[in-house]
Each structure stands twice: as C-alpha cells, then as structure tokens.
Length: 439
Image 1 (cartoon, helix red, strand yellow):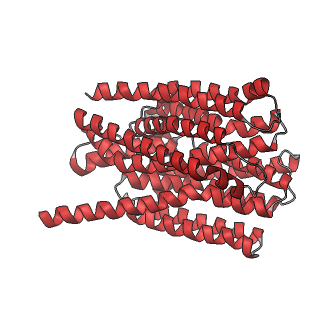
Image 2 (cartoon, helix red, strand yellow):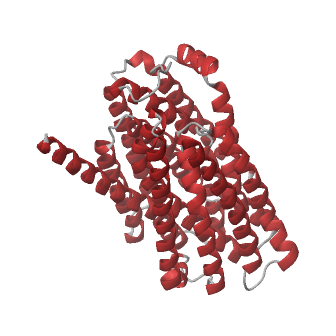
Image 3 (tube, rainbow, N blue to C red):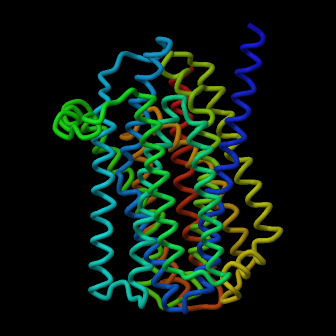
C-alpha cells in the first residue's frame, strides 16, 4: 500500500512539473511572436499584424466557452464512472464529436472572414499569405484547447502535456529561425503543420481514453440533438459569457485604432494584454492542477474541504500576480524597450498601474476558472457584463480626459485599471458566496 501511495505521489509531482513547463512555454509565446514580427515587418505592417492577432483572439474565444461546458459535464461523468463521487449524468460521447466539428467549422469560417477583410482593405498588408496562414495556425488553438480540457477532465493529461511541450519548443525554434534568414512564409507553414500534428495527437488520445468509435466523432445529428435537448441553456450562458470576456479583453485594440492614431498607446496596450495573458495562463495552470480536488469535493458534497481548497487556489493566484509585479518593477521598462525594438518607452507610473491591475486579475481568474469548471455560467455572466462596460469605456474616457496622442498614457491605464478593480470586487464577492454555500 505504501508503495502505491509513493508511486501516486511521484506521478503527481511529475505531472505538476510537466504542466509548469508547458505553462511557462505558453506564457512566453506571445512575447517571441512580437519580438520576431516587429523586427521583420515594417511599421504599418506590424500595426496590421496586431489587429490580426486581436481578431484571432476573438476567433479562438468564439468557441463560446463550449470547452468549459464539456469539461464540467465530462468531469462529472468521469468521477461518477470511476468511484461514484460524481452525480449520475446523461453525458454522451457524441457530444465531443459535435464540439470537434463545430470548432473545425469555426476555424474555416474565421479564415474565410480574414481573407475577406484583407480583400476589402480592412486589414492592409502586402503579405496576405503570411497573415492568412498565421491566422489559421493560431485559430487551431481551439482544437488544442479541446484536447487539453477533455484530457484533464479524464485524468489523462500527462502524455498530452509532454506532446504539447514538444510542439511549443519546436514552434519557438521555427519562429526564431526567421531572424537567422529562414523565409517568413516557410516559417508560418511549418508552424501550421506543427499545430495540425498536435491537434491530431490530442484527438487520438481522447479517442482511446473514451473508447470512442469513428462514427461518434461525426454523429452531428444525434450528438447535436442531445446537446439541444439537455443543456442548450448552459451553452447560451457560456456563449454570452465568452463574448463578453473576449470583447472586454480585446476591444481596446480596435478602439485605439479607430479613435486615435496613437502608435505608442497601441504598443502599450499590446504589452498590457500580453502580461494579462501570461499571468492568466499561469493562474489557469495552477487552478487546473487544483480542479480535480475542487470538483471532487464539490460534487461529493465535501463542503469544508472545498472551501479550504478554494482559499488555497486564490492564495496561489495572488502570489503569481505578485511575482509578475516584482518582475515588472525590476525589469519591465527594459523588457518593453527590447520587445518593441525601442519604438516606445514605458513609464514607471504606467508599470505600477499595471501591477495593480494584475492583482485584480488574479481574483477574477480564480473565480472564472473555478465557477466555469462547476458549470456556473449564468452566475459568471452577471460579473462579466460590468467588466465589459468598463473596458469599452476606458479608451473613449482616456481620450476625452487626457487627449491623444500624448507623451504618456496614464489616463488610459487609470481607467482600464479601475475596470479591473471593479470586476475583481464583484468576483471576490461571488467567491465569498460560493464558500458560504460550501460551508
């Protein structure tokens, strides 16, 4: 028995270290992409590229949070099947196939739309092939996300994490090879091939773990009908929540481009966005590591254990945000200058406001990831809509009060930071109610 326990603890440590390595690579990805593209694209091309990235973020998130819904349903089903700690469910394997087909359609639809935007001149570029292939490569992340969430729900993600680490390391090598003379078009084609291979590997792992048949991946009518009958309301709430969150995080890109000609503000927000994504990715990894325990306690009705686990998860998230804050204070200005090839400088006041924003983000992420895993999409929507309103207002308010362009962008950082602080307070209250219900 002791040997089995020791083996289990070793396996858990290996999984944790592997996930941390993968998270570090995921956090880094946006920075090398900017580092390379800002050096190989002219100024106007790079501005167009930032808008393409923002549109890609919308497309990736247009899976409407369905992977969160599938995780919550699949996790409950798997726990009940394994040890009876979950509640009886009506989960069908065809649901995974329906989501898979929907996400493929989303990638194809987004690609057609990007092509149309380039033809219409809304995305102005002299490198349409590079932009389109890069978009398709990035959009495939929705299928990689499906693999990650499904395998996590099935307690079978170690092999996936190893495969994903290999994919990310190779992708970084291919990306930096551009600075050594490799053609940019060749690089993005190779990146696309890596993401296609990663997607295929993820689907094969799900297929084996769930003992699925090929027809279950293609059973659109049966699986779609079951989804429509049983949890369409959850999907509707998740879709509205996702649209709200994506618009809140990405809308400043388009508002800055539409309301100002402030190149510095666009670079500043891109840096803020990258820091938000990096910290949120790290927090998501820690929450995902805690979700097996949190969901087991919640669905088994172990109230006090759930409350303690939730408090620990929040503490870790705040510690990660504090670590990012220390890094920014120590080296943020240097990182900003190097990342954007000296095209702009960042003030310490702006960095300090970003540090406050990241602390509020830690509270928001903990709430969103935990409640999403529990299927509480309707409750999350009530906390997301005020955040959306604040984000949409931040750029117009900053332009109105501070003017644009200007030598600093402190007004924008103040308004955008207040948006996060207000949302953080709403999410803190929500977690307090969640803990009270659990106690």
